[in-house]
Image (cartoon, rainbow over all chains, first blue to last red; front, side, top):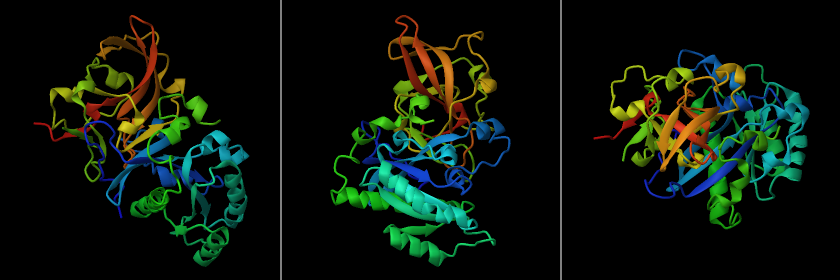
Length: 215
Length: 143
């Protein structure tokens, strides 16, 4: 399922997509949220100054049941350290990925707190997904069964991931997008996914990041 | 209809479908001034590849990464440098400030473009535009 990379959505004229989805990565700092979004390897073509600046968001186009869906994927830019993620960050989010590190029990325990915070700030209709990251590490302390159990308790789906494996990372975004699209198709998310209206506040990358980057 | 893709082997991520009406000319020095990625081989060199594509809306991209705000320490102050002026939409625009970088959404290489604050030379109106460096990419399907 490496479908995230090859899709080109443009029809040439007018709207080049069927729907757009804002998706957030949430969790303690250090769990590898950024690594799910970028995997900077510094070389001649990945100059260090871009790594230093960091990434605000990415747009990826996926094909879901024949529909061109554009995903806008956001990282928290480290605000989680102070638990100061503002409501603006959550606004318009249709998908939220709760990330913990399978080698760090504290980040797993904190997921319940993040779940509570997300429920306070995000749209009730937002689709959540629990992700246990760094599953390739031998120093794992949180088992996949524990992750499953927590996901069941919270009533959300669960995936383990390794940011070292591109396909796996893409599968996370694809899985979430598919769940959201199914919600849209069953009209549970009417008026959110069928155009830009639902996402106006997210700063369509037009440079006003000081407003939307919620610092 | 041509497409701009990542120029790197094994990636070739689809960045955007090119609307020829939105291609602009910028001086050669823009590449070095803004530290933009140069296509290594230029094997697909066509005149347009030294040009830029104006992308008014970020949702026009198929796949792209957008950096955070560029600190002034990286590009310095543009005000005392040569003017970067281009024609777009019946107006003459001047680049006032380079705000953010664009990179490949799949392999993270770049920068392949910039997000700039530009100013209409006659009306003093300011806008924010995405300027995609066609020279930093591979152009597919031309001819």
